[in-house]
Every structure is written in C-alpha cells, then in structure tokens.
Amino acid sequence: MNLITQVLPVALPTLGWAAHALVLLRRLRAARTDRLTGLMRREEFTPRALRALRHPHTAVLLLDLNGFKQINDTHGHEAGDRVIAAVGRRLSAWCKERDGFAARLGGDEFTALVRLAPEADPDAEMRCLSARLSAPLDAGTVTLAPRASIGLSRTADHPGAGLSDLLRGADEAMYAAKRRGIPWQPARPAAPRTRRPSRPGPAHLTLLTPVWRKAS
Image (tube, rainbow, N blue to C red):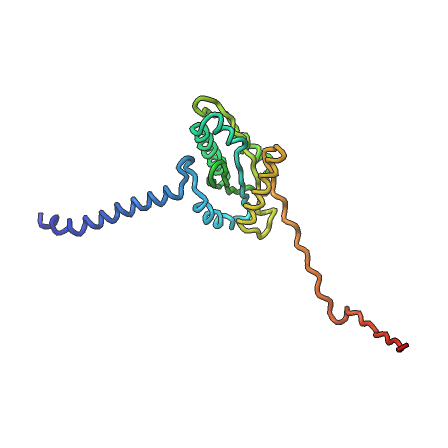
C-alpha cells in the first residue's frame, strides 16, 4: 500500500501528459487530413512530395471534376459531398497501387504523386484512372458518373524540375484537357536548354576607319 501511495503522485502526471500528447497528435493529424475524403491536405502533401521526388520515375498529377457545380446546383450539396468522397477513395486506391499518394487541394481539385516505370504507357495509365473515377456511384437520390480532367507531369520529361514546376505543368495540361474535352493531357516537355551566345571579344569587333571630310 505504501508503494502505491509513493508511485501514484509520480505516475498520474506522466499518464496525464501522455494522454494530452495523444490528443494533440490526433488534432494535428485531423488538421492535416481532409474531413470529407480522408486524404491529406496541401500542407501535408508538399513536404511528402518533395521527398518522393528523389525517385527518378515520379509523376505528378492534377485533376478536377467536370460539371461539379452543376451537380451541387441540381442534386444538392449532400450529393456533391458523396461524389467528392468517392473520387477521393478511388484516387487514393489507384495511387497506392503505384507507390503513390493523393491529396485534396480544395473544392473538386485533387493532386497526386505516383511512380511510373519508364516502360509504362502513360495513356493506358491515365485512361485506367479516368475509368475508375467515372464509375457510377450512388449519390443518394441519383446515380452519378463523375468525369475528371487530368494533367500529368513526369520528371523524366522535365529533368531538374522542382515540385512547383511540375505542378504548374500539370495544371496547364489539366486545363488543356478540359478545353479539348479529353480525359487527360501530358505537360509539355521541357524545352532543351540552348547555350547563350558569348559576347564578342576583341577579335570579333569591327574597327571602323574614321572618314575625314575636308571643310568646304
């Protein structure tokens, strides 16, 4: 009994701090996780993507849903939420099969990072993703088949590009796909760097002989 009396004053504060730390960890995880989809948020995606880009065969994707506002306006926000949640689950499953991960940037916009082997067919990969995302789903009072526009930016096509450059390329490609009405579009390959012409040295200078005119 005396031993218990001696240990309790020390153990209780320790247990209290442990419980408090667990609560803080859960709150931090919730702050970094999108409530609707369970995907990470932008703040969590960025540092993780920067680390993942060290792999030589990495691809960055951006996608958003076509006509999502119409879904909300016609069928209500509850139906829209079900669509977003389903798209998040499907995108996450597709990414995990390719050693990748996804994030919700907000609204109906998502991003992802995956590994695509050099021999992988990008068109087959993106069409596979598009087909998964557009599979019919029960949105409560209606069955919907969400459609997405996807932009793909591969590190192999952009040597030395950072995350912001890859995301910018994927973003431009995504909107190009949306304008063309096609499922996906690759980012434009990086233009080859050309050497700037060197400044001419003294040997290249043209010396002009002064012309003296007689005074009239």
